[in-house]
Amino acid sequence: MNENKQQIESFPWYIWQQHEGNQRFRSAEGRPGRIISGRLLPGCDLLHGIIEMADAHRVRSAWVNGFGSLAKATFSRGIVLSRNDPERVERLPNVNLPGPIEMWSGMGRFGIPQTGEPFIHFHGLVVTPEGRLYGGHFFPGGNIVYATFEIHIQEVLGVEFRLEMDEEVELPLIEPKEM
Image (cartoon, rainbow, N blue to C red; front, side, top):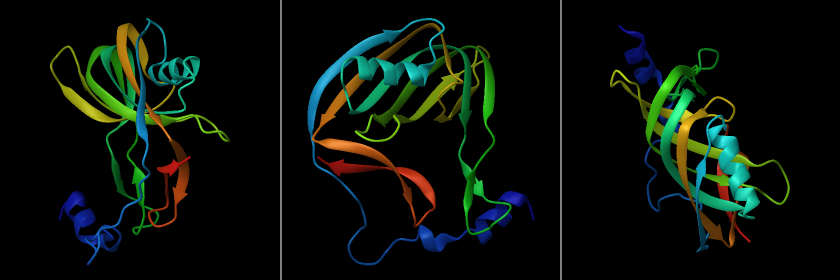
């Protein structure tokens, strides 16, 4: 039996099973604010650049999307069952791609909370010069702009995004809170 099939058969589905009755969710109601449109310049770190651009315009919570070229990319393609604790998940090792490569689509959300550190949750789809597609969760510090990266920030007013530990899944996740 291959390792993936073993993982699927032993996965702790109780966490992600469909619940009977009302669906479960957390939400907060806000309203659209300003739209900031900009360009990250060569040598800029993609995710640090997004946060700094938002901070320069005093944006605290927002959705972001963009596309452009990267000199290198660092991302994770997902999660798997933990080898140390089969009832938990852990992130796959990072993929490090040398560039230049194109990010065809990237999106996420970020928060600059009133207390605590700024954070960003960003996923993207990149293509190599050979035409290979990769996608995943991108991290600050490992994604350097090559020629340009176009960014569009949609401010969310009345909501603060906070990075909090979710006790059910034991992962830090973004929680929207009405302000």
